[in-house]
Length: 400
Image (cartoon, rainbow, N blue to C red; front, side, top):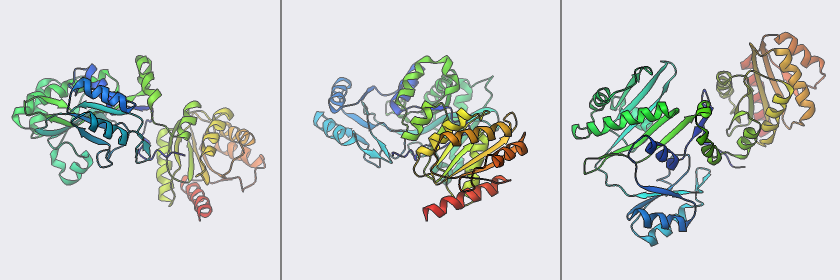
């Protein structure tokens, strides 16, 4: 089973991550300058694109994971023979568990300087956040670790937005050379338009380059779309079709579950994204590792719980299942009924440890007790930490 180790759960995982080529096409809709190019699924396609846009070209692996260059997934080609060689080598390449199914072929760019720019949402501040640095072309986390002052962070009121003057001041504050500030500011305004009108969760350019001719240009694109805005963007369905999902995630998508596959041994089911994230943390604190992120939201009827358990059960790495429910709108007795019925429908390979708290939790625990399910298949714990420790102990004992 393919593992999707590069993906990490987020507070709201209703996100569509685009490939680089899709991000560049998205940028172009908002007037952000990108290199001429196209996507190829075969060597012949790659050659045809290179011939059309003109040499030299760059052949770039399209995978949703970093480290493409170090893995040999980005190559410069000066002629047809080199395009054929590089496309042959890159297509089918495995980069951190992601098999390359397509390459982006684009005109090579002359680079004088490299910068970094991105917009995202700062949920704590309830504002948009611009991050800008004169040090681009490397992971922004590395820049932050080595020199935090090299990154300008500017909170933006969503009602006000950002204009050319504010964008240029941000460029100056980031110590971007004066010769590039107007060009950078112009792209920052367009990138913000893309971020807001384009309903992005993240819009990142790394690197944002200055050419020797003085033009500022997006050389790479990382775009994550907020799928809650799908009703405004029917054209996004094509992005859903190209998402990189492992077998577990594909099954969860079919069952309309908010699920991300991870690499651990403790299966996780929780109601609410925040609680699910906390559950992953407490499992780690207890010395274990989560096999997934799965948020069942506000409902926990038999159909939903059955679907969740079927997805968890599909993962052969799962050695225990931690169900963590805190009832508000979700009632503990309904959750318990759903679990009992789901366990009748699904022959589980791993035992369940449940923590049930909140509305009607006592009634729910009584329902589980009265169901006569043996403790080898289901045990209940009063607190999240105790339940996590029990789930981790079971998983670790089976692995050992």
